Structures are given as structure tokens and as C-alpha cells.
Amino acid sequence: MNGLVGAVVLTKTGGVLGPIADILGWIMDLLFRFTSTFGIVNIGLCIILFTLVTKVLMMPLTIKQQKSSKLMAVMQPEITAIQKKYKGKENDQKYAMMMQTEIKAVYEKYGTSMTGGCLPLLIQMPIIFALYRVIYNIPAYVQSVRGYYETIISKLPNGYQTAQAFTDLAEAHKMVGDKFDYSNVNTVIDLLYKLTGQQWDSLAAAFSSIGEAVTEGGVRVIDAIENMQNFLGINIAYTPLQVIMNYFSKADGTTLMHAFAALCIPLIAGLSQWYSTKLMTASQPKQNNDDNPAASMMKSMNITMPLMSVFFCFSFASGIGLYWVAQSVFTIIQQVGINSYLNKVDIDDLVQKNVEKANKKRAKKGLPPTKVGNVDEMLKKIEEKETKEESNRMAKLAKTKAQVEESNKFYNDNAKPGSLAARANMVAKYNEKHEKGNKK
Image (tube, rainbow, N blue to C red; front, side, top):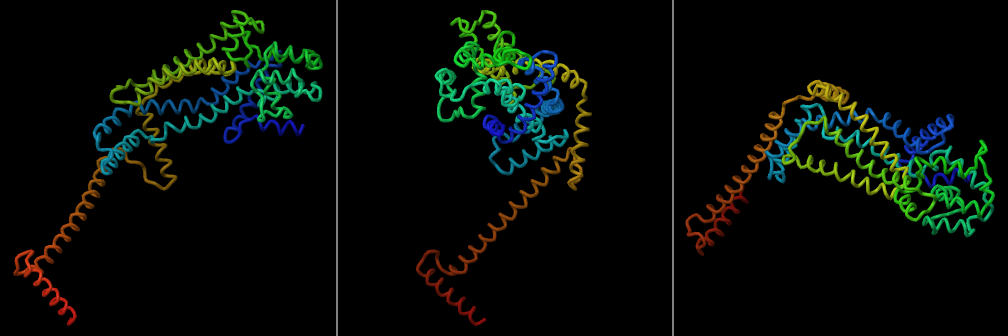
């Protein structure tokens, strides 16, 4: 058992994502156990329920982020006007400071900050990446699923790692080389999770003991694994492209319906993502893309990102595609409710609440309340500082010039400038001044 625990660490993600992925894996394991009590042992259904649970958990962050987006859309014309005002002067330190001061005042006016809209998104990012990791390698995080594969491995004879049937499977999935250690149980599970129906049959033919292995309910373990990975006739460990190619090669009993279902996953993932994004921007005021390049870029991304999802879905395991579809469908349902809520939110009330929250935070830090509309005063201080610095600089230049003129007048008193007499007179005057200085 100690060997198994040590092996788990190798296949799991590390760093910041590690603990998050462990928690999400625990949630998915609970869902798997819950559906199993009703006789439904299916990873595809668990992925859908898992997506629903995570969407509900992240709902507060989603609402906060979209409130910030709505405020940003209202603020953007004012920010764009300020940027136009200082266009071409951004490299001048004085005008750059003035522009930042005015933009900061706009944020304070609406009770938000330049990083306020990014924070909820930054919090969600590690959760989203951890989600992908769990779904991509379910047996590593969902102990209930892992148990089926451990049962298979326990029935394999000693030295199975070097058997021709096993090495052929490893080569078929390009899992060969020094980095794949098949004395490590977890590496073996990673390989078994990728097997097709025909490959399970070939493995059972080579090792009869695993073909005879059964679950507590008396079902063959191999059949149980294939059934729980099957969703609408598709093995969620296969890529949609793999399913479609299996149909044309008449492999693995793949039918036209299976190929069609596999094709639908990337297409529905792209379409649903495009529509959910469209709904997200529906409650925000329309912006002029000519005045706001960021809005134009976002509009382009709203088209290209769904297209990229379609492309990647063909090469990723169908479980990832199923997650994307479920994610987008739940987002659409969620967004309809959020849009209805945001349309009823009064911007003035939202701004007032934001300002009150900001002032409470400032009070905890011992800072005075933020003053809305004090941009003119702030700009005036910048102008005064700039004027004072310029005056000091001009005074220094005038003083230096006066000293030079006095020196020239002293040394060139009664002689033509540049003449030999002037030079001689300069030397004499210098000596005279030096002597007077010594007497003092």
C-alpha cells in the first residue's frame, strides 16, 4: 500500500494546483459514489454533475467579475476620452502622470480599482486548470475509479511489464522510454486508462487472470471499466478523432452513430462556448470599437476561442470535450439568470456600494475616505510641482549665466575682447585679485 501512495504523487500535478486538484478529485469521488448507490456507474455522468457543482461553487466569483465588467463598460468612454486627450504625450513623464491621475480618479469615482476586475478571474484560473487535470487523468484523483484498475493489476502475473502483449500496448499509445516506469503502479494505470475495447480483449487473451477478475457485484472488471467509461456509445478516454477513424477502419465495433456523436462533441463545444460568451456581453453597454481597441480585440477573441475549442476537442480525450460542452451549457443557463439580475441592478446603487466598501478598507488601513471628483485638485498639485521644479531650474541657469558674465567683465575691462592686451590684463587682474585675497 505504501508503494501505491508514493506512486500517486508522480501522476498528480504539483505546485499550487496540487491541493486544488485533490479537493476537486475528492468532490468527483463523492459524486461517483453517490451515483453508484443508484446503480449508475458512469464517469461521463459524473463529469456533468462535477461541472454543475463547480459552477455553483464559483457562482459568487462569476457574479462579482461580471459586475466589474459591467462597470468597466460604463467607465470605458471616460477612460477612452482621457487617453485621447493625452494621445502622443504618453512618453512625457509629466503628461503620463497626469493621464494616470485622471484615470485613477475615474476608477475612484465608480468605487473600483484597476485590478478589481482581474482579481475574481485570477482566483478562478488555478481552479479551472486543476479541473482540467482531474478530468484528464480521472483514476489519479478519483479513488473509487482507481480501485477498478488496481484490481486488474493485482491479477497480473509477475514480470507482466516485459510480456510482448503489454509492451505492444505501451508502444501503441507511445508510452515507451525511460520516463515510463512500469514498475510504478500509477504508470500502469495511466496506460490502462487509455485502452480501447479491442486492446482490453488482447490483454485478457494474454493474461487470462484479468479476464476472470470480477467486482464485488460479480461483474467482470474489464466490462465494468468499459461500461463506466462509455457515454452515449463513446469511450470518454478516446479522442473524437480516434472514434471517427475507428469507424472508417471498422475497428472496435464503432458504428456511424458513434462517429456522429464523436463529431458532435467538438461542434457543440464550440457553438455553446460562442453563445455563452455572447450572453456574457449582452448585458453590457455597446462600445465603439474604433475608440476602444481592447473591445475590438475581445470581439475577435470571442470568435477565435470557440474555433480553437473545436480544433483542440478533436485531439483531446472525449471526457475533456464533454466537460467543455457541460461547462458551456451550464454557463448559458447561469448567464440567463445573471443577465436578468444585472439588468435590474442600478449602476448608481452599485457605485455607491463600491465606494462604501472601498472607504471601509481605507479606514482599516488608517487612510481617509476617497474623494470623488477631486481630479482637478490632483492635477493642480501636479502642475504646481512641475512649475516649481521649472522655476528652480531656470533660477539655477540665470545664476550660472550671471557668474559667467561677471567673470568676463572683470577680466576684459579696458581691452578689446580676444586681444593680446586683454589676455595680459586678465592675468594682471587675476594676480591683483589673488593678492587682495591673501591680504584679507
